[in-house]
Each structure stands twice: as C-alpha cells, then as structure tokens.
Image (cartoon, rainbow, N blue to C red; front, side, top):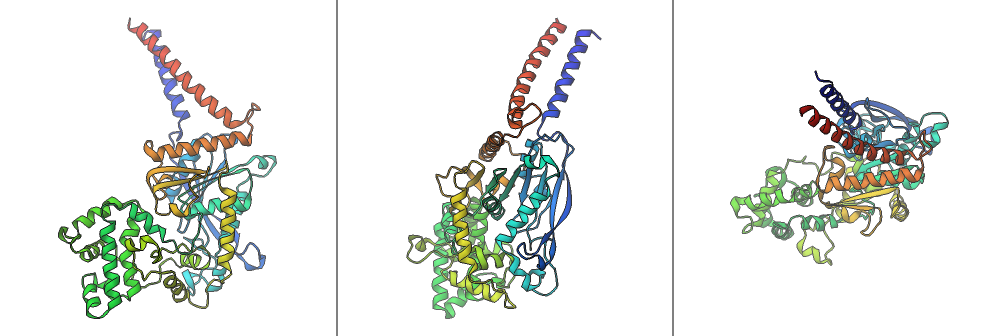
Length: 494
C-alpha cells in the first residue's frame, strides 16, 4: 500500500474515533439501577420513624467530566420508571454535561410508601398521611441530594441541577427556594407555581387549543346542564344517549365524566385529534346534535371506574390539604362561563365535598395547611422570578400555563406549539423544532451558571469555560484535519 494512502486511512480512523469519543452519548447505552434511601417519615420529629424512598441511578460507562453537576430528575405524583433515566431531557442533559443522573420518587407514590399496611388510604395507615406535605417532600429532596456528595474536601465544589415536569417541576423550584444554595440550578417544565384553589383557567386554555370544536362542545355542556337542572324525563332521556357505566352515576359524577375527553386532550396536546373526532361524531352531525357528539366522545374515551373517588388518593390528599388547583367550571360572572367546557355542577364546593367523602377515617388535612401553603407559594414565586439559576419552560399548548410563572419573567423560556411537559418528557433524541431550541436555551443557561460558579479544573480556569473553549477548538481542529485529509487524498489520487 502506498505510504500516503496508509497515512490517509490512519488520519480518517483517528478522526472517526475522536468524533465518537466526544459525542454526547459516548456511544454507550445507559444502565439504570434501582436503589433506596432511608428517610425520616417526619423531618421535624425523629420519633416518627423512617421509610424507604426509591430512586434510580443512571450508570453510564462514559468519561465523567471533573466538576460536572449532579443531575436529579424529580418525579411528581407517580412512580418512577426506567425511561425517566434514559429518554428525558434530564438524561440528555446529564450526558451533555458528562455527569451522573438520579431519578427520585416522592413519598406516598410508587413504591415509596411509609409504613405500608392494608388498612387506610393508599395502602398506608391514615395517621401517616399527615406527613404527606410539600414541606416534607422538599426535605426529602434536599437530604437525598446531599447524600450524593462524596466525603472530603471536594464536597464544597459539588453542584446540583434539579429538574422536573409538572408537579415535579414545582417541587424542584420550591426546593431551590427553601435551600437557597447558589450551587443549585433548577429546570422546571410546565410547573404550576401559582396555586389557586379553583383553577378554572385550565378550560380557558383548553378552549384556545380547540378552535374547531370548543364552541360545539360548550353548547353540549350547557344543554346537559339545562336538562339535569330540570330533571325528570328530560334528564333520563339525555342520560340514555351515554354509555350505561356513565349514565347511572349521580349528576355531579356524570358531569365530571363528560369533561374527561377535553381535559385529556388538552393535557396531552391532542386538541386537533379531539376536534377531528368531534367532526366525525354522531355520524358527522355533532354540530346539529351537540349532545350526541359529546356522548360519542365520552364513549370513545377510556372507561373510568364508577367510584367518584380517584384511584390516586395521595394526590387527592395533597389537593385537599395544600395544593388546590381543582379544575372547576368558571365563575358565573366571568364572560367565559357562557363558553364553559365543563358542567356548572363542578364547583369548588363539589370538590370540597369530594375530600370529605373520599378521605375517610377522620383523616382530613388540617384547615390551617392551605393558607400557610398559599403564603409559602407566593414567597417562593417572588424569590424565584428572574433568577439566573432557575429556568421555567412554558409550552404554548399547555393548559397549566396560567398557573406558571408570569409572562415577562426573566426565568421563563417559551416553547411554542409544545404540549404540557413535552420539552422534558419528549424522547432525548429531539434535534429540531421549538423543543430542541428550548433545550439549547436551557443548556446555555446551565453553562453560564457553571461559569459564574467558577468551578475550577486542573488549569485554574473555570471548568465550564474549558469545556466550551475545548468544544469549539475541537470542531475547528476536525475541520482543519478534514481539509488536510482531502488534500492528501487528492495527492494520492494524482
């Protein structure tokens, strides 16, 4: 083989190997393992006992970068799954920063249940439900984060990136507020930060996402309200057009079932698909017979349990005790009431009664919790707004955006056209469009924060600066080497 050709091949192989080594994923699949940490049931009362809180660790055989922050993805009102550590933006960011990733499950969700028994709410002794408060969850998160810090002098240089979507994003941001450590950065997607008891603006946002069918569905809801209000044969006839499992329910529970298709479509960014089903409903005559169209949508929805009590009592407890955020009908005095997408029966009083009916054994949360939490949430919002170490992403098609940080807030990044939490939950391979742009904006903020933190590598220069400069230098070197290889190829061919 001609020596010049051999040199060309060696250079080409070197470039390919170098490119693979510098990639975000390093060409190695993540290995996810399950672990447990012992947490106090009550962080303010050591005598209350302990429970095992589950978390996942992403073990990648990649080059860990010195000074890279620890990324913690905070699951919200659900159990953790392996894909949380492999297919989320948190996983992509951890790879990008060459740092570790952990996924933390919350108390009373998934397998992280204090003193599980067969009696009581959610498989838990009812008295322990008093430890299900946001304050206790924030203590869990902070204690878990600190448990990951290695012993020794390097501990002071450890940094954390807390990430979450929806309620998980709220928990991440509230942890920053109570911790107030400059070494903590927060990325919160679709996170409710304003917590009204009645969040009727969910449907106001939903109506904006259903331009082709919102008014027709509203007419159906108003017709249902009228028939239920008059009762008798008219109400019985109306119920007869709906699935039997729905029709046999009491008025309020029946009305709640009718709101499910719209709520789900809005939550998951499927407004166009819902309107397409509406157009085809009732043999294409939904506009002429809107109640029949609504019945068709309800029939197509996944069947729900006939009980009015939700299957996730822990979340019900949190709504009843602190969070609120009930999806109600708008107040009658508001102009949107004439265009409402859910029954007038679904009021705040209805949900207050739901708390009394579905939280038995005298386990209602103390009345003082709610006003105290309102003050906490307001103080947190004031502290977090506009900070350089917090970023809130707000999707354009998110019905929870009216509960997020206000427009004009410096820490807010818009994600046009995206659904609730899509920028966090979408597969890590997203490489174009608004979600990709939002992610790049977040990465840029994280890198600026790392520079401001002044984490130092072996050169005495901030490690984030080194990483950015080296990345640019590497790209330039690859381009120059490519031109050299091309020239050698031409020479060898000549």
